[in-house]
Image (cartoon, rainbow, N blue to C red; front, side, top):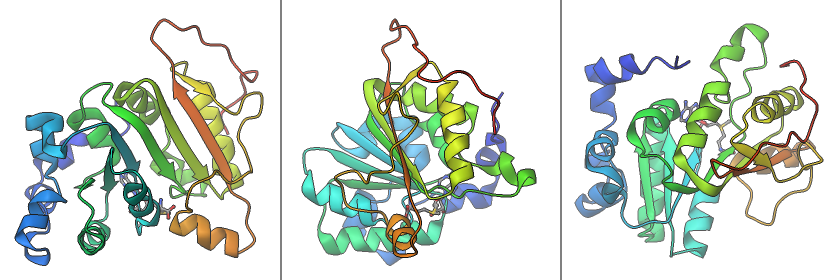
Length: 242
Ligand SMILES: C[S@@+](CC[C@H](N)C(=O)[O-])C[C@H]1O[C@@H](n2cnc3c(N)ncnc32)[C@H](O)[C@@H]1O
């Protein structure tokens, strides 16, 4: 069973309305081009995002990484997914100012898009950087990374597709490792290490920049989606979930 209650997103008129592109705030052409209605993706398929290959960033925040990556790599389409409408609106303006034609934005909860809107095996890469750590034990159920999310990520990534994550929170790093070491669809690319402390060769996200300036270490994770037939070789002995 899903840990996310999709029904509220499906049924609430307010949510349905807020999933629409922020038309009035963008030039008309850009409103159509950049902000994609989640229901259009759900019913119309990947064509509504433009041509692939596709990279998805979940929770892009201020969007620094997505903008830099899209500018560097015009051959791929970079899809930014955010639960915050304000962030989608601001990002759409940034994309427009940067004149990038290979960025699409979705305003919706990640769980809904992964489960209902994206077709299986459609993503070359997915990024989830510095997701909210929800440090209190009673809030752990709100964490984005859950066993169900890992299952859904395995559904949407193509075989060999890459999943990259990062966190500045040591307890969340343990949690992320726990979730993915139990998900046989993913191979840990840092094995035998559980994660890497070394910054990858890519621009930093806004939160990564802030945390590093604050003297905090970032844990980086990288996984490959196994082919269905490939056996799972655990890189770590099974441990209790933190
Ligand atoms: C701590 S911020 C990190 C932003 C960015 N990734 C960075 O590293 O700078 C987490 C972001 O995830 C978004 N978010 C939280 N839960 C989400 C969900 N279920 N679906 C999509 N986005 C989500 C928040 O709105 C926020 O922008």
